[in-house]
Every structure is written in C-alpha cells, then in structure tokens.
Image 1 (cartoon, rainbow, N blue to C red):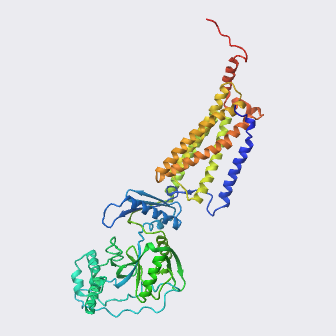
Image 2 (image 1 turned 45 degrees about the horizontal axis):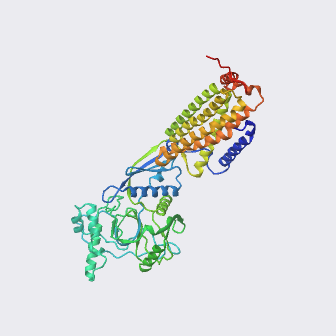
Length: 573
C-alpha cells in the first residue's frame, strides 16, 4: 500500500532542494575569479580553428598510433599553457585545434615538433650570399674570434648567446666552391657539407690533411644557399647520430653541428624567466640524472667551445661554454621575447611530437558570428519553453503551473552547474550543448506528463485526488526512472564514442537528465503532495487542476460499483 501524501513531509524535500540551490549559487558568486556565466565555445564567442597536417620524413602515411600520441602531447601543451576551452581532435591525418576567445595565436605554436637536442658546433659561417666567381679564393680560415671572458650568468649557467661571433669564420668563400655548387639545390649542397671529411668521427692523422679537410668543409658550408629565414635544408632527416647542417635563421649564421650529445627527452623541466644582468628573456632547463651527467662531462671537456641548442633543426642558441656546468641545470639564451621564451619552455616541458606538422589552415570565427549563433540558440530554447508552458497550462492548469515552476528551478540548477563546470574542469558550452539543453526540456516535461497521467489513471478509478497522489507517484516513479536511465545511458555511450561537438551535445543531455530526477523527486512530487493536502477550496477543486473530466468519470465508475458485501444485479437470460 502506498504511503499517504501526509506522510511525505514535502517541506523537508523542498528545504533540501533550496539548500542545494543556495550552496551552488554561493559557489558561483563567492568562489573563483571569473564571471558568473558559463564558458562559451568557439561557435558562441568566436575564436580560432587551426588545422595541422602531419608529414613524415619519407613522405609516407603517418601511423594511427603516432597521430594519437601527437594529439595527446598537443592536448597536454594546451592544458599547460592555460588555454581554456580548447579542443584537440583527429580528423584523418590532420589534428584540428579549436581555441575560443582571443587566444588563437598561442594555438598556432602548439603544433611545433619541439625536437630538442644539444650538439657540438664544429664550424659556422655568416649566412651571407656567396661571393661572385671573380672574388679571390681564400682557402684558409681567418683567426678565430676570442670568446668573451665574462660568463653570461651565475652558477652553472651557460655562456654567451648565439649572436656572438662564431668560433671559426672564413673571410670569404672560395670561388671554385661557389661556382661548382651554384647549380646544386640546397638539399644537395647540405648533403655535400655533411659528408665532408672533417665531419668524420676520426680526424685525419696528418695535420696537413686535416687542414685541407677543414678548408673544404668551410668552402662547402659557405657555398650553401640559404633563402631568407630558411630552415634546415635537410629538415625531416635530422638523425641524432649524424652531423647536422642548418641555415641558423635565428642568428643569421650557418652551422655544421656534430652528432647529438643530449636528446630533448633528458629534459626534466623547463621554465622561462627574465635575466636582469643580461637584460633578456631566458629558458631555464633542468636535466634528468643521465642527461645532467652527460652535460657536465661535455662542458668540463669543452670549455671555450660552442654547444648548440637545436629545436626542430633550428639553432635556438649557440653559447660558448665558459665553465663546467654540473648539477643538471642550465639555460638557453637567444633573441627571445617574453612570448617566445614562454612558448619554448612550455613546449619543451611537455615533450616533442613524434611527427612534423604544417599549419595548413587557420580560420578565425568572429565574435559577431558567435553572438548571432548564441542568440539563435536562446531564441530556439525560449520557443521550446513557451510551447511547453502553453501546453501545460491548457491541459493541466494549476498542475501546469507547478510544471512551469519546476522547469524554472531546473533551469536555475542547470545554469549554476554549467558555470561551476566551466571553472572546475574547463567545460565550454557550444551550440551542440545548447541543443542538448533544449532537448532536455522535453525530457523534463515528459517526466511531469508521466506523473500527471498516472494521477489521472488513479482518479479515473474512483479515488480522490489526495489518495491518488501517493499511488500515482509510486507507479510513475518506476517509469520515470526507466525513461531517464535510458536517456542517460544513450548520452553516456554517445559521449564515449563521439568526438567534437557531438560530445558537447551528449554531455549536456546526460547532465540535464540527472538534474531532471533531482527536480522531479525534490520539487515536483512534494509540490503536488502539498496541493493534495491543502484545505483551500480553490486548490482542491478538480477543475482548477485539470482533473474535472476524470474526476467525473471516476465518480460514475465508483457509483456503478456494488456496495461492499453485495452482489451486482445480474439479469437472467
């Protein structure tokens, strides 16, 4: 037997719901530094969408595992630099980064490979056009520049930045070399430089042969054609165990670098900062134990020589080692702005990508378009609510007012949860999420319809409104739970298997379904129970509750039933 409405104590349920609302809005208005509004996605507030196209050194098809690994690393970089509301998804061989608001410039740097390595500088020449063929040949290098005597930094910091004069620079390239290599493309020239005898692991024993090899190497490097702001001609073939030839566009110097001494995977942490003594931005690195030991051994044995920090085949900094750097901590110096230093530190901190990427597309969505989309979504939601309100008032009357009130409270609950989720987990509301909320209006209204129709069934059987409430609720509750469970399960499965905007739709649909149960249990049913026990003639009138017709039918059925203990009159045939 169902409990009577009087045993429900609806005041306790309503007080508990009020407590939930008060706590949520206290968190909304008195915690966090952001506005008391949900975070909006790119389609609602505008932003930038960057498409990165993967490429491999051999031009082949990238594997799915490498693409997934790259996506995860980019997503980690996004979280590390604090770009809120960003979405990183795979689209074939592309990675699509969506950044709401005005943080699109940061997203464009997220696809950098960030393959860092430390190499010894074998030789370097200024990145200037080769001399004409009539220029006199100069086979011997000029006198090496004197390294600065003052260490560029305290403690174990490394030496001067990359823009200092290189350790050995020829006065002019040989005319023969220039004329001989003039018809070659940069890739062929770079391969010739990399295969020069002076780059072999063992130097020739004969000093004369060594000098000739070094001269040939410098001629080949000087003849290397580098376009303005060119990258390494052998980019994509940066083998750690092979020498590297790079145009060094950061400091207008061409480099020949030895094999990699320390890979970027040995970096434990990286942070940017401003060096007051040098008056420039720097990046502080801390190595892992193996990398720190290797760096200490190298700097101890190569004081006065240059070591290049190479990021994606580009020499970021080529300082001169002033003293042994022990302890696993060092610095990268160069022509950094504050943004450059921060981006470099963040990228190095979160690891290098297994693939190289080209930024094939960068689309900016204006805030005006986003506002128009948001306005259209709100209008659609308002129309949906208005239709539900009109239906409830026409069909259920006073019970329809309870439905409207329950929907309003449900909306307050959803709004507060969206604001808090935006602060706590970075959830952003997009158009797909708005669509999920609009559909959830129908799910919530459906729960009320189920309950009220169960009440009509009980009254149709001849029961009073007061006795029909607990019985109707006991039956409607099972149906509501089953219906909401199916909706939530569908939303959960859709969220797991889908990506992008579909996930936003599934999330708001599932969240609203859960909140629907909260409202039905803590608001709608207690309010109906309070009305059923009210002594007001207006509230107890079945016509005012939209129950006049079923009440009349129930009375007729009740009067047609035989009295207890009596048989109904049966006419004999």
